[in-house]
Image (cartoon, rainbow, N blue to C red; front, side, top):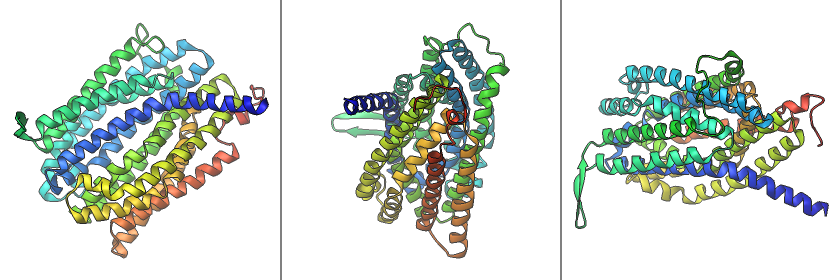
Length: 464
């Protein structure tokens, strides 16, 4: 009987985990599908167009990740208060997230638009495509305010278990993006018996399509948040609230430094790869795009891990904390083994979708098969980091990621390229070494139990 009861509990936990992770995984799948379509559509214009779009991708990560770090602070606070049943504080935190969107959105709009022409130069982009890359970047960041809303409000909704709304908003963004891509990138053309209008804007057309899509997504998610039964900020002061902002920023600030430091590392990493030439840049850009689809299970499960850990902390239930942690890590490993195996097998086929260059396809296939082997290990790191975010432990992840990025990936890549004339393969080898380093540190930290605040507090509900 006990065995049957335990199995029912395990299936129940899996149901809760995947009910939270499922919509997020689907949302990210749709985002990646559109990224694939964008890359394929732009790739049909030639290697130079692909390189122009991909040359500033890591700067996009830098900005997006910094805004996401603010969201992590709200996720940790709101998930904890939701778990404890204090819905007044949940709504007050939601109101403060409106202030966070306004500040971050305006700040990054001014910053990105003013630096748009300098970014391709700093990224060592080939002189022949710098102007196109700069225009693409400028257009992409014009709607930074709705982009910030999509990121931060989406995190607020996920913190109370609503993962479907961000998914629906993401689907809307993707539909708008694909339709406008089709109309703006290409010239007017004949498809069968139909004449399809086109603006013939090329790379700039892809940027406009994305910008309009982001704007639509921001409007949708703002409207839903405003009328949400759990987290509506209506009739609640939007003035700075120290009682709410202090704990949110305490979690968000180390995470922001981590994301800023690691994404700055991505910029340095991409800059070194850009210096290897157009083929390496195109292969790296496409391989990154392909790889992102196979990380979807990891980052979808990370959201569930963060929310469930925060809820368990708020409820002061250590047994539930440990059960969900073990089941989430196990589920993640299984998913990432499957994902990594598929990536290894289909790497050449995936590269072939986005490029006609045999040189680009061959180089990209090699690095993708290299990284596929490390995916299950990296997946463990993603989940443990998510649980630590959910309980407000963001200092250790900051230290781990900065050491791994700058001490292993960047330094290693610099040494191989500058002193051993290494290419893209050696650079991705350093990236894999970085991922394995994170796995070792996170796994040790998880097994020790130091990530869990309930292990260090007496008098809390703990039946484990």
